[in-house]
Length: 483
Ligand SMILES: [Zn+2]
Image (cartoon, rainbow, N blue to C red; front, side, top):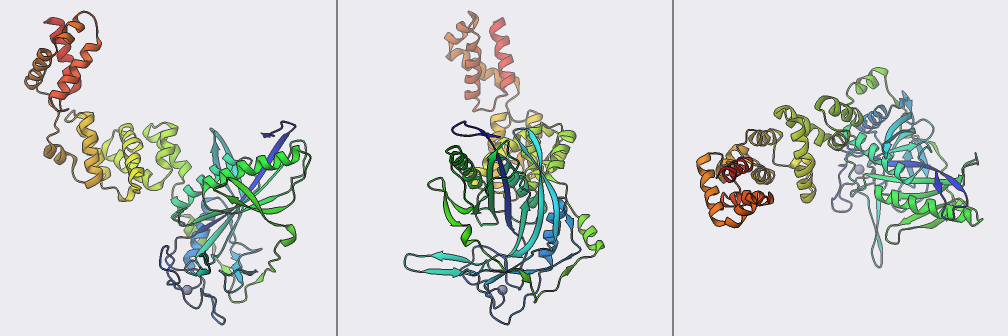
């Protein structure tokens, strides 16, 4: 429930999302061209994906498997028979003037996705998932435009949600949860910068006491989750303001302007498309056997939500820590490997949650590429546990391991970081510190306990950070209390 700007009445918000996800296949959906990003324009193309007359599509088997896997992970029913249809419209980046999609017999129907907003769990219905082809990309220059067809024919899955999302926060949570599931299943790289996930938003508001839904506004082609959130915050308050002022919402498509932070009218209902769907004559229906579907079902990995619960149960982590560590499957795998090697579950979690994720985000390095292995992290934690090195030294060893890899014990040796724990050396540092700071000694003896901390700091400095701070503290206290 959202309170209107003028506070005249309360409104209910209804949001549905249509999310397009590029599938992680080796080749395109109808031809053998490579499915990859970032190549020079029009280099991954052939007569099929360029839409030449007379060419015939051949369905990529893996694109069907990935779509069905997504459906299974989201609890959908899988249609044993599904068909392709032509969706006719003209667009410069679609040379056939129709897109091959699925209309009334999609691969997956009905499903659910669990989301959590401010600690409250909710399940959003999935209406359907169908498979289609992506189109090319128009590039506009100052005086002219060009079309890059490398993207044309990329397998694209459209996931349609039920209109059960009720706020910008829920929409954001839905997309985040969806991305986690797709990453876990290896279905898509989900790289937003490369346009792997794009959403169309349907949004309407209505006074709480009214049953009938308000007029639907569509916001097209959102390619960031943050953009979805911001555009909804704007659009919901815009619609409420119009209604509060006694106006009415007309059905239209709007575009989000990320720079100005507003949605702008794009086209009204009069220009709504008639896509003239009809069965694609060049493709046979897709017929899946029960064995095939069950075989794929058996390969579903543990889902992010289940893994989070297990991390709490098995490793005694907090809900929050388990949520962070399980969000990315690769991070979760890394954690489990290091936790099992180390046995110090909480310490491993702390190192990953702070130093590791921080260093990864600074260098924009995915965990698969970090140089410190799970075994090395476990080794480092063991050195701290056995008091071979103190915490500041451990951080230095971590930085070196993160950048160069290697064995933590070797690095401690090379860098001379072993903690000074022999009493003789510590006594020498303590003597020096006491001689150099008589004022602190008398301060401590006259009751200023903070002076002790200062003297420990001096011992650490004299030892170049290698003294065991706890031992130094105890020895200093003993000396000052008795001496
Ligand atoms: Zn091709």
